[in-house]
Length: 340
Image (tube, rainbow, N blue to C red; front, top):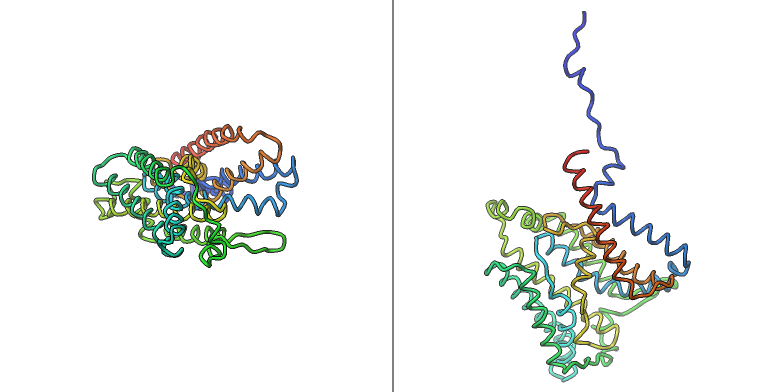
């Protein structure tokens, strides 16, 4: 009589299928939602996917997208920055005030605007890490201070930027060219380059591992020698600098530096990042998911107008999408942890 080993009697473990593996990715939900949205909007109004409309939509997408890229890294580290909308409006005001008053040439005024933003980010980061005050409260305070300073400096009036149309820096940042009938702005190229760079940093570098460890388990990360405070300060500075860069790009495109520009952007950016699959309390973030979240919200704003829905209903759609994505991410996370 032949005895069968216990290994032979043990049923083989099911390997996860390719579909199940794909569904487990945090980008799966946003990807499906984006495809469904494109199909629905195009079916109702075929002009939605016209080259002219796509070009216009991408132009507006870039500016919020730049802020969302940096916010992804900051939220992965377990922090928030509510001051990005104010920095978006303040940095261009500083830049164009210096240029229009003939204090500095445009390139130096640009660097000054970025430097001011870096100083704001440094202040936020040191305040959060040294005093152990929640970033929500710290950046809420700086939001009000920065916005108030911008309004005070300008007496509430926009600064003109049209004198810079022929400046090489303006062309480098917001110059345009055509691919067939598709109008492409240089800002889109900057956005793609920065998205690739930050994706590489987050997924392929030691600093990216530090970011995820800082948000996932800060005590364990600290015990392993991760410089948590330094990581957070750097990310706050990056967040402010990207907001400043986005604001400057926007000011050149619309030919005005408005001190009220960027109002409410902080919440929309956080919504983009969360919809994309970045965990709200830190530890896991995805640049690819953020790109999908950016496209979802910006194309939705464009699409609901094209199909005749009142633009004032946009916030209803945002809120519904956030709730749906949170439920989906929670369900996928639960299945992943239980192995079901």
